[in-house]
Image 1: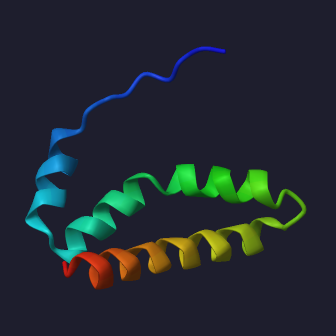
Image 2 (image 1 turned 90 degrees about the horizontal axis):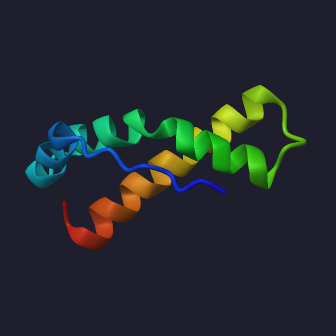
Length: 72
């Protein structure tokens, strides 16, 4: 199994340091494909629309968690 290469996206680091919800949304949007893959592997029997809705809810919950826990 090959190790995945990590590519540093400096624009995303700057966005994250700004702490704005818009910046966090930008980051989540850029990585939504990872969340979609996780949902697919956890529940492959869901149809595409259900997986997309689930992914959106996960992203919203993650945004809430970051905002509430870390006071962003």
